[in-house]
Every structure is written in structure tokens, then in C-alpha cells.
Image 1: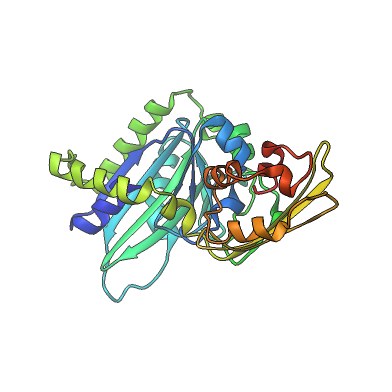
Image 2 (image 1 turned 90 degrees about the vertical axis):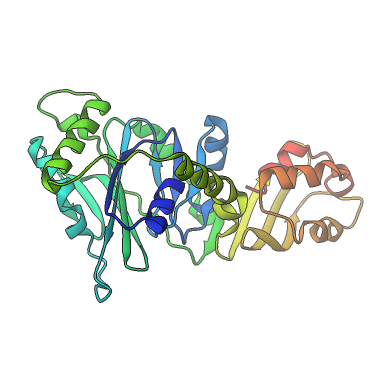
Length: 314
């Protein structure tokens, strides 16, 4: 993500890139991150969650998925968001591999009606970044689990990802190949189409500026979670010995504005004390856990364990 933004904003030439990520969820610029991911599964599997600078829905990456990026210059009067035009080189490359891929809907590529590529776009001055996925041998079960969420828990104004039937490109090849072989084939095809391309190696100065952008933006909670729009969150859980607890939160830019607890639990203290402590805190597991560890949980929820209470927050 940092490489893309750096090249978009700091170079003038047109660029094509192929790249891979380890297991990760990449959410759209305008999405509510927490409503797009299965947080328990993400934490269990160590999946990175990163926000990109383009719109659209959340996508899953792993090493069986190949990503591509086009950075192109455009006429200042060209205001169109024409995915099909920018995706033609990819479609041509796939057809050279005897894959009957087609553009469909708003921004997808499909084989036999099944999606294997989701795409997104953004603009900077007279330049456009258009990037997308190419599911080659992705672990589909990880994809479905990582993006599986309880939509009823959230009520927000963010763009919702659309659950789609997906397929891997490898299932449609006449001749088997690895994802790295596939990467080489795609690169060769694109180079043939462009006819004048040359490989560029990032300099030490490039890498330093990219590293700075990575640390200051793409690895921060504020960018990946805090930029989520205002949303209401609610969840109810029945604890083992303490009864049922329901939590309702109002959150803006990842920060809790209001908190209310409901349920049939017993409490020695006034629950509004805990509600007030939550206001101004990040809706983030580590932040909430640290806060609750400083509280006497049984003062507010008789016979409720810390881990049980934490589950109500996410």
C-alpha cells in the first residue's frame, strides 16, 4: 500500500506492478473496518488488516493471490471512472493463457460467473491508480472466514462489501502452473502489450520514504481502524454465571462517544461509572482490555470474567 501511494504521488511515469501479500484483509478507504472483518478469526490467524487509499469493498490477500497495480497519467478533463478500459490489458493477458475471463458488474472480473478479481481506483492530480486482485490459488475457506461478520451488530453509513461467489484461476488452466509462473506470464503479456516498458528498481531513497509512509500511516491504528465512519455497535452475550450482558456503543473515528450496558446481571456499583470510563477510548481490543484490567469487574458485573466481558465489545 505504501509503495503504491509513494509511486502515485512522487513519480510522473506510468507504472505497472505485480505483487503479493501474506494473509491480510485490505479494506476500502470509506469502509468501517470492524464491520467488514471477523475479528476473532483475524486475531487467531495473525491476519494483517490494512486500509487502502481507494474505495470499494474489503478483499482478502494471501500468497495464492496475485495483485496488480496500474498507475497512469490522464488528461485533466478525463473525469471518468472506467474500470473496463483499465482492465483490458489484464483481460488480454488472461485470454492469451486461454482463460475465458470477462468484465462484469461495477468493477469485477469473472470466469463462468464466478469472481476472481475485485478492483478499485483513486485519483491524484492528473494521475490514476487502479489496482485489483487475481485469485490464483487462494485458500477460499480463509477468505470466507476472515470476511465473515455479523452484519446485525453494526448500523453505520460505510460501504458494505458484497459477498460474492469466488473461484481460483488455477482451477481453469489448461496447463497447471504455480502462482510464480503465472506472475511471470502476466508480466510478459503486459510488457508485450506496452511495447516500451523497462523494469525500475526502487532506490535507497525510494525505500526510505516508503518505509516512513508505512510506519506513519499504514501500520497505524488511526489509519486502519480510526478512520472508520460513525457507527452504532451492539452485542449481547450470556455469561456462564453472571447473566446476560448487552452493550450498545456509539463510535466516531474509532473513538467511543457513548456506552450503555443492559441485561439481567447483578452489580454492586453504579454501571454508569464504567460507561463514563469508556467514553473517549478507542474501540480497540487492547485498549478496552487494558481499561478493564484496571477495574474491579465484579464491582459492576457479579461473577463475570474479564474475557467474557471483552467478548461483548467485539
